[in-house]
Image 1 (cartoon, rainbow, N blue to C red):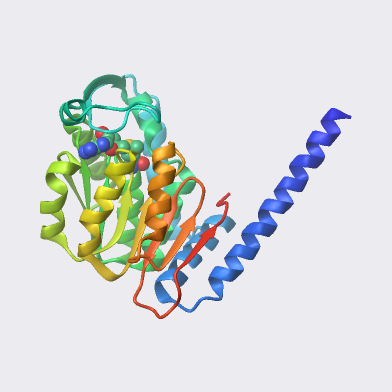
Image 2 (image 1 turned 135 degrees about the horizontal axis):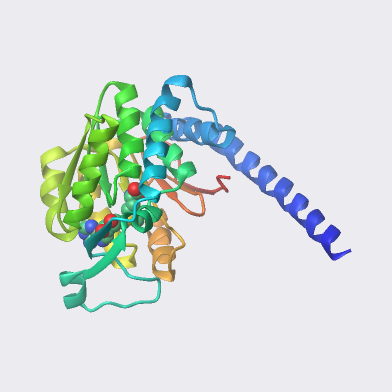
Length: 289
Ligand SMILES: C[S@@+](CC[C@H](N)C(=O)[O-])C[C@H]1O[C@@H](n2cnc3c(N)ncnc32)[C@H](O)[C@@H]1O
């Protein structure tokens, strides 16, 4: 009886989740805003797992590389400047110096965006067609590969990705090279030290993915540093919205920011849309998968 009840509950949840997602998507679809419309098209492609032949060429290459890296037992030494865990409070000195960590590439690659989120970034860049993309947190280069592969298909645009750990950034550069990605530049440096200068070099920025140092104040500081240099129509994606209480507070503050027109909470990731359209600010919540 317990097993049957569990199965029934799962079926009910499945239909409930899909119904809720359908309703939210329809609300999003009915809003007339070009930037938001490109996000909605990307979300629909991800939900229906729609990948064309030319897209599959890149997706397969990236996922094959991920599979190879997962089997690597080579050890790397990383200076990590990010938040260690959701409950750790670091002193300013600890944040400044970073922590030295040793791990195999096989373990390190597990911190990359999973397939579905990679596809979401890929589809967002394909649909939105940005000229300039910026990423905070390169790691071994999986998410930047998805975004810059989309730039290859768009045949336009460039991307700068920033990583604090030199050893990791160098491997990411190699990975970009193996994949044949020509529109991505990898920069090494602590966000706090290099972000402003890099933004001044590349602005205006149309598309941003923030996936490093999941800490409340740091996340808000990165947004505040980037915001003045965003294009009039821009998309920002944040990863790990629910990683900690601090990240949840940061996301709430971001959705309330006056510079934002639409916010889409996908539970794991969050998308912010900057747009000059006349629409009222709105926040949506939908389960991606
Ligand atoms: C979750 S990983 C990024 C994963 C990558 N976006 C992907 O999906 O392929 C976060 C990265 O951000 C880097 N990082 C964290 N805090 C940083 C900081 N303050 N400055 C520079 N890099 C930082 C870490 O070294 C780590 O490699």
